Amino acid sequence: MRFFRAGARPGVIGSRIAYPWQGVLLATLASALWGLAPVALKMTLAGYSPEIISPIRLGLAAVIFRALAGREGRWLPRDAWSWIGGVGLGVDFILYNYGVRLTTAGVAGLVINVEVVATIALAVWLLGERLTRRRIAGSLVTLAGVLYVATEGAALGDLLAREHVLGNALIMLAGIAWSVFAVAQRRVPRRGNLFVLLAPIFSVAALTTVPLLILPSALRGTGGLVPTLMLGALILLCTAAVYFIYARCQEMVDVSVLAVVLSSIPVFAVLFAWLLLAEPLTRRVILGGVVILAGILLITTERAPSKAITPGEAPFLAQ
Image (cartoon, rainbow, N blue to C red; front, side, top):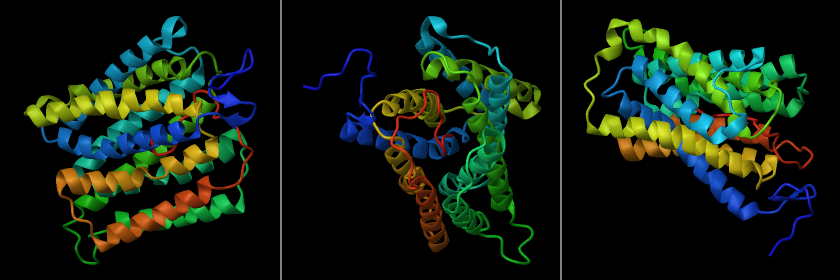
């Protein structure tokens, strides 16, 4: 039995995390659920339009987060940074949905890692974080892997078969938009739990995607059992549940350990795409994935003081 001093946060003893193994297991589960997201989205797009998926996914997630936030929760934010973060998240979902429709789920799970680099750049600019040699090297390695995977099928002269390249480009832009959310939410005044922070941001994100519903293509989906089940998985597993699990991980695992475990998200994305969609594991995808993973690990294993993650801090690679 472990004892905590009065006033101490459960899960932390001094500066040391008290539940490392349980936390690592939960962080691995979070990585798997985030890795499942592009595959579930790809299967959802078989029956629903990109325009309708975003407001449903973000709106229902906002309702769940608002319920988990308790009495301190709000539907709409009071500060400008929450609005900026919400708009960034909404734009991310819009671009990501269109991008996944044009490319493969496995490649999407790899290419989206451009957000790691974009977040570092924005954090240096807006948060005053240090730009170390290790972060620069990791960013360059990650970008090299992303570009290598993203241009698969873009042979010279093959100008009519550029659908995947366009989809990959949209996903990279989505990653940059998500980085705006990631940095903006770090500027939001902290109060209450993670869901007090997320509920109003997700509400704004949902509102950002609503105008797309006026497009003629918004209601052209055929529905179906599998797409509907996958839409439910996106909302419950890949959004609400994974953030709840992540919030618990914050109290159980050191920030450096959590960052390393979450770097496995691209691996899960490629594996789920292979298992559930029978997407081929080409040499380019495997090699590019290894390069991307190496770049992420180079960044996330940088030495830093051991501490718990600031409540509300969002991880990289979360879609």
